[in-house]
Amino acid sequence: MPEFQTSPGMRDILPPDSARWRRFQAVFASVVEAAGYGEIMPPLMEDLGVFMRIGDATDVVTKEMYDFVDKGERRVALRPEQTASVCRAFTQHRPLTPWKVYYSGPNFRYEKPQRGRYRQFDQVGIEVLGADDPYLDVEVIALGWEFYRRLGLRRVDLLLNSLGEPEDRAAYVEALQTYFDDNSGALTAQSRVTLAKNPLRVLDSKRSPDAAVIAAAPRIGAFYSPQAAAHFEQVQNGLTDLSIPFTIDTTLVRGLDYYRRTTFEFQGGTLESAQNALGGGGRYDGLVESLGGPPTHGIGFALGLDRTLLACDDEGVFAAPDTSVDIFVVDTTGGREALRITAELRDCGFATDRAFENRSMKAQMKAADRSGALLAVIIGSNEVEAGTVVVRPLRQPIGEAARQYDIPRDTLVSEVTQALVKAVREASA
RNA sequence: GUGGUCGUAGCUCAGCUGGUAGAGCAUCAGUUUGUGGUACUGAGGGUCGCGGGUUCGAGCCCCGUCGGUCACCCCA
Image (cartoon, rainbow, N blue to C red):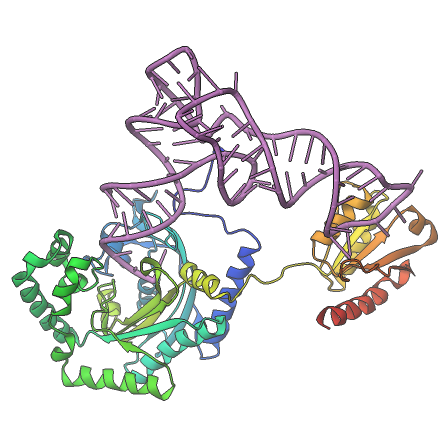
């Protein structure tokens, strides 16, 4: 074991995996930019108070924050999510509404790491501030749905719920509290602890002894005000109009305390339940206000990159993109000629790699093969003397002899262009 | 944070009831005095996560610790 390793829950993303991450973010950007969203890049660190507004009943805030005092005696924290930062940015800059933004990047939570759960983890997401239209809820959900489709995922389930208006939610929480209190004998000890903090969260319990109690608990639906019920119905109708299948799940309460009305979650059908939440979101009317801004409607979602990639692996889609080079330059005369040729080819836009340390012809050819290049450009002492270079196609079927040929050194670019066109055509045939 | 489980070469792993380490792949070199991907030969590479303990002797047993993983919790 080396002396230094990444800290728990932190890891290096190496090639070719890193290319997959980049493409993931690029696909997301293209989906939401096509709907008018612009990218916001908030800082990784904010005043601790910004994140405290997420809610003091959530572990994300109370137990998992990477907070510390900086050299200027400020209480700061690494962001555990980005919604709060977006709302802070909104109150700070007061952009025109509706303000449609997307983000992509790492967040930090001090949790015990597990598969699909890291202390530094990437999310992509969108937020819309300043609009109350239920069709906006539909747009937001539909964009998440569309993104999964673009990745190639098919086994994603959309769970939908509404927590009602704040008053509805409060009345429901009260009813739940009463119900669970009356039945606390049947709950697990852990659920009783949860109950003391937030009765809604008890609905999330995955412990089997709780299942019966939860199944018989009061449902949120009975507590909706007429407005909340109408909003929820329009959201459902809109999703149906777009042929997006969903399941109403009245126990879907989401972890963050700021949610109001519409909440939703995307679950991966192939994943274990501990990791099956690929992403989720909802309305958080009130969050901007709690950060000192004007009363402002808000809705958005965040999708976890790690779990979504796990789901992609399970479904065999969205493989790491090919990052191989077009041309590999082999030079057995010391490497100076390779230096010139490589630079020339790169200038002309060809992805080009080469070998170093003046290794044997065989070793350099091996490296050329490994590079995935379609073409090798070879220079030995004979070629230097004759003023030529060898062009050798590399991707013919095993057993078939390579048809390499000499070309004049000064026709390199045009010859290589032709050879590449041919190689690509043969490869796709 | 609580509990289970695992931790041996770069990677995947084997190692019988304790007797001072192996395979496959990968890497490098040679068979081929200029040419890769299939074949053959060989080489390099490990303080068996770390620290204690038991023992004549520990990769194998015990304790602790760190890390991964699984469940709970939480959530993405």
